[in-house]
Length: 103
Image 1 (cartoon, helix red, strand yellow):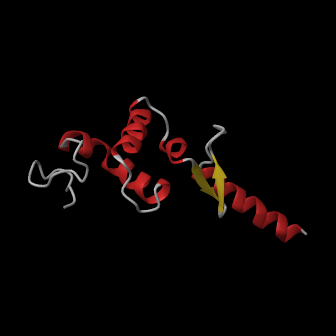
Image 2: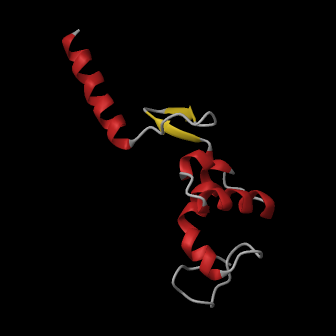
């Protein structure tokens, strides 16, 4: 049964080892981890606890996931490069469009 954020104790969190308060605080990040890092599969408690510990220390979610999409490519973040930003992707697309128009 999924946990509905803000619904109190009526719905337990989807992981037995996690309380409602902790799940509510990290529910978006957990959803992104499950979707992007674990490809829709429920991670083990050990793996999720490790990921949550990294998030609690302030590590960006993209580093925890391990990659970021940029212009249709998966950028590997395992070596901790700068994380591509959406604004950079936008301006890069504009520059590519203008360069193609010139040539």
